[in-house]
Length: 64
Image 1 (cartoon, rainbow, N blue to C red):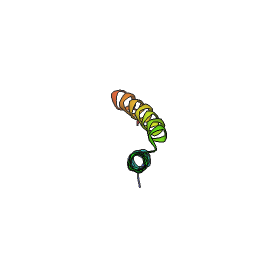
Image 2 (image 1 turned 45 degrees about the vertical axis):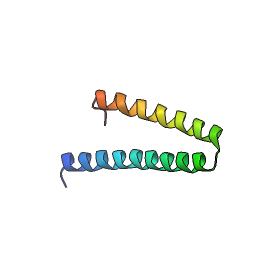
Image 3 (image 1 turned 90 degrees about the vertical axis):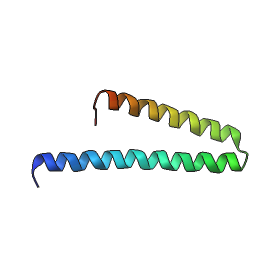
Image 4 (image 1 turned 135 degrees about the horizontal axis):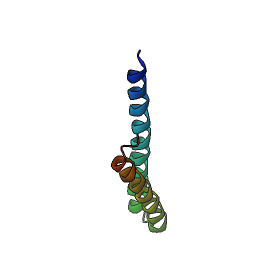
C-alpha cells in the first residue's frame, strides 16, 4: 500500500468515526425526547451542534 492510499484510508476512518458519533447522538436525542427527558435532550443537542460547527469549519479548511 502506498503512502497516499494509506493516508486516504486513515482519512476515511476519521470521517467514519466522527459520523458514527453523530448518529449515536441523534439516536440519544430521539430517545430522550420520546421519554420527555427534555433537559438531557437539550444538552445533547447543544453538544451535537458544537460538533457540527467544528465539522463545518474543518470542511471549510479541508482539514481532514
